[in-house]
Length: 104
Image 1 (tube, rainbow, N blue to C red):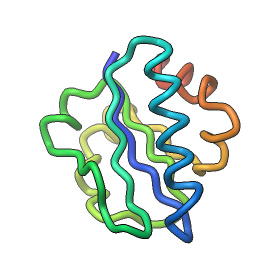
Image 2 (cartoon, rainbow, N blue to C red; image 1 turned 60 degrees about the horizontal axis):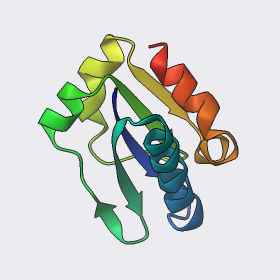
Image 3 (cartoon, rainbow, N blue to C red; image 1 turned 90 degrees about the vertical axis):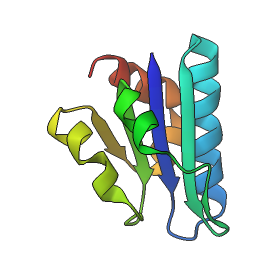
């Protein structure tokens, strides 16, 4: 399974990177390919390109604010392949979020 994600919190520091880590660790445990873009205090890091998004089985938007480039995910949204959730929820229970992604 291939998962891409964007993590962004209101301040752009702690929860952004904690959510990134939680998603990456859970995907690693399951042997899934994963890439997480962060939009935090240091700007956009690890930016997802169109091919990575197109090839993904699921997209997790762990965001508490509007993000740059959200239109990149329109096709996945229309296909019902997006989970939009607050970063704190991902941090608390990443396994449940990846379980949901598997069912998309």
